[in-house]
Length: 294
Length: 308
Image (tube, rainbow over all chains, first blue to last red; front, top):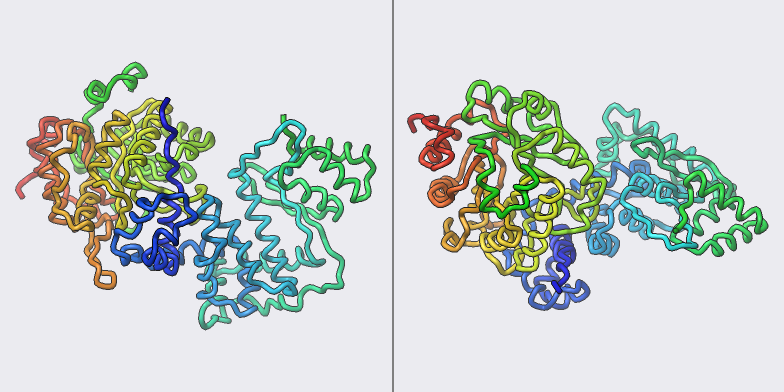
């Protein structure tokens, strides 16, 4: 019987991490066995990574900047809100030294999912609008990438379709996002230029939109709003729709595959009886919001 | 290539491959750069230098106007992929394969080729595209060979792995040893990029011809020649594979040497897609002069080398 092929991803992941993170690279050169202990590579294989001249890993100084530009282009309103909170370019570059970045590369995930995870870990819990903008744009990014997901469901399991995300936000968050998003898209300079001006070392206020005022835009006392983000059309462009908070909880409860009974339990806890819960599930399966196994 | 041929050994298959001669490369948007070479103009004004177009393709982007115009003219092409990690079985996902099939049917290439390296980390997503060399180990060659066999079987066309560019090479094997192993395991031909090889040999501190004696030269079907620019990073000299017109002396040396050793070469691309047509002609003439004595290519390039 032939041997299974070796998975090369762990090797490539280490190379990518060393290209993007100078601190990690230095750690590997100091002690490759220790720095790469969790990669599954043998000691001999780990030593391969310190054979090249370390300077060769850093000859492309714009590698991370290009990636960051792509990331911020999908988190434009978040970037403006972060700029208002004092974030500048070097702080965004800290992403490449983060556990979120390294975990995503190691697990072969899109960095568009790791980036908001890292941002949220760096933003205070009381920064309501900032967190809401990141959460909403993360949902949009996830729905745009529904094609990457390949759900594996067993018989008797249900799961929210990858093309749907439900989030609960502070009241007024969607309107705030839409206002700034539309202003960005309408900017003659283009989204990337506006963001670059906002997060530059000396922000060019002439190119920045009028005072965003994210800090005081949302109120903890306001009612929350639940939103579904759904891929639509051939290109899968996301569409926003307000939904009930109870439905959002039910959908969030099956973000990962769960037994039908678990779905019913959540629906019941949100106020439906068992018959209504089963009818809801049938409706959600029929319109493609929820997938079933088998 | 007919299905009954694609299942034959490489030594049989190679005899059925067409001789394309000298050609030019393109990728999405390259021809729209101000002053860049127009492949069709090259083909019309210098038919021996523009005998085929190597179309660099990312399935997600498709073909640009220049590539479409060439395809519509029914001139010969090759399909150069820019988006498949051949060493990763999971990268052969159905939507990508369907997209590639559609483009292959549209282009009708003589064969498929492309850098056998890491084209993207994670999924094929914005900002995740890059090109790194393969891991230079025996297990990596096994995985790469499996990917080549798979793509060849699915597409019904020869798949020629190319040695990628790079500055960081990971693994214990010499790059020629790695590709020899890969091609033997895949029973495949190869696209040898001479500029990339010159960069590799220089980066590793080797002579340009290191590793030549044990390489299976009969497997080389296509060559690339391209310019490169010498740069410095904190005292480290390195070559930027910029596809300019300044071809390294080592690259010319490799071309001359390889053409004496590789009897099955059927195509040479001068990768100069972002340069003005007239400025590329002396490079083409140099290539044609080198190829004029080759047993197969010589019949196509004739005396196009001119006086050099």
